[in-house]
Image (cartoon, rainbow, N blue to C red; front, side, top):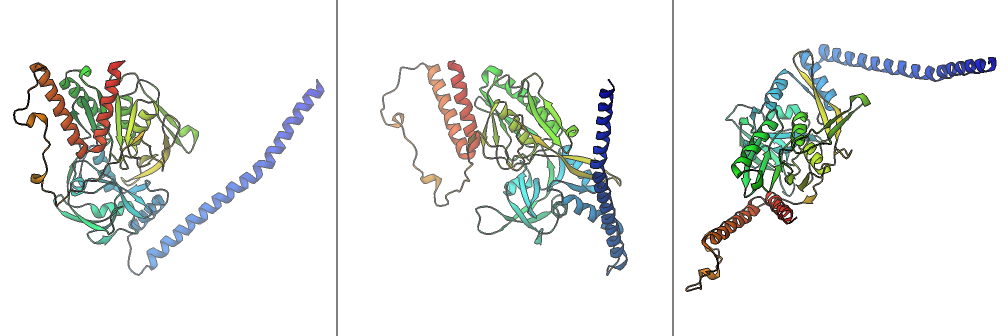
Length: 444
């Protein structure tokens, strides 16, 4: 018994000695790190004081400090930034769905301002700005060397005023100018329409109205179609959707899933992580779903596409998405401003981060650029002729009037589909895919 006690005491003593031997260098290292931080802060104070007192002209001390904070934030990543009070107010208005400006979502890449996507129905969209464009100048002033907030500030202005942006676009040999008239941007988060038997849900942004608009629009479209039995499937169009609120992306994903993980976030510490799961209930009632994405689909859009793809709830069609897989938290700070800080990465249900990689579509469908042929006159195009157009052709009396009407309707739908392929090849492909899935389902 005594030997056991002694052995136990020996173990405790050895543990204390070992801990002391390890902790000593760690404490010294931490003290050295703290001393280094204080030295750097002293350096900052010294530089600040010298600028304040010795710069060639008098400077505003508040502006100096704000510039230092902005520099500190932008050194982290393209999405972290300091929001002065006015910018913070503008951001809060924007998430409510109405604001003034051009209607583009931008980021910064290698010091250049890059368009993530133009928003539907906005001045930038109407003027022909495209996802992936690089904006180099605003009204002749170069944006090189400015941080993102400063570049955005140059693009702001009174509603009705003109702005000239200079754009570099892949496939174009030279930069070119685009004229845009600023306007009040009123975003309709979700637009719903039917194409034949397919319900198309166009989600333009993820603001606090998105899920509500989606649910009401979907239910109305199904009712107008004559019930869910008359619908062959749903297209969720997320092209050029730059993202928005994480909570809304989760609700939209949940709307089409019965169970399972939607997305998880992982921060610097394990306790900072979170996991979001679907709840029972599918607005589409199990009908096939196709999700459309492209290089302008970012952030919240990628959460939805990734969740529905991983659960095999939807077929993803289009081109690779933008690849923004980080979560920004808005933290109010003293002085009525805020900081937008990247606090986590998000992961699709399969555990894959899309940061920098994007969501890859199940079926890649490029959207061809339409280049009208100026030499072709519509009036000179040959018109397709058929047997029924020939003089004295034999009539077909093997169909009833009802069957004839049905054939005519099917032909009109086919012609509309062909027209859509010219206007929007990706959406037409998605609708054709749903038709095929519905045909297979009806045979089983």
